[in-house]
Image (cartoon, rainbow, N blue to C red; front, side):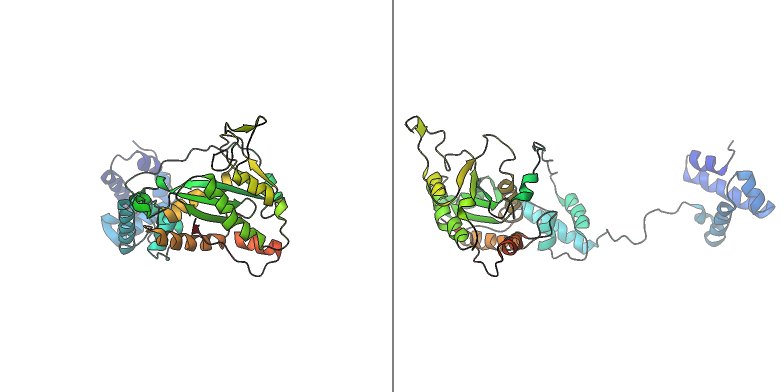
Length: 347
């Protein structure tokens, strides 16, 4: 029926059938010898020896196929660690926190395994599957960023905190501000943030006056007149679409006027451009994922405390695919030993 041992192995319908055939092979080898049996079954002598040896040591049970799973798996966690991960994930899901494997590993103090291993168990513990983010990039070259100096271009944008589920219960009675104003340097990735209760040009100008300008002014050898402030076309930044005209031109907003008086110019992006504000938008995603939607934030004090810790960690951590941190980039370029860092504040 079968002309070789390989055909027997590939066409066996059950494990019992395969064991019986191997038993026949062993008995034949004991009768006519290993070499003749190997020639008859068209297999190697080592194959015949292997089944003879297993039958001699373990009997008929030794003719079963052994499991191919490794005896020791470095990617397998022990039960207490798996239970800890499941508990952290369930607690965070109940509080509507954004769950990442980095945060789970940090909160559980799980240091005896890799990120990939923790990530695998976190995915299993999560009840909902993550939706894949669509790629909205325009595939245009970003080589110009490599030629930039620190603070040549600073992107400013406003983030809605009301979109974060974990914070929604705490906006009543103004326990928490509703908006985050963020400025981020395109070259170094250095972020500066503040919080406010209203999305208006009053607060964005206040951010420039009380936070951004004092910080930049202290840096020696930094020419403030070389700095471009880039924003979108929102009314909290510009009067471009305002219907109030003087000689058929819109009046500059107080935000734009402050920039013209202290910096190079106010640069507006193309309306609807999805990657023009990529640096500040990516930071908004990072701070939401790893701080705002993760930490236990319930009032102004906890907001400032948690975001201050996050910013200190962020500016001292290497950027993606870079060998420098945002703070190192600024200090090395301007030869700074000490610098007063702007802490998150509520305007």
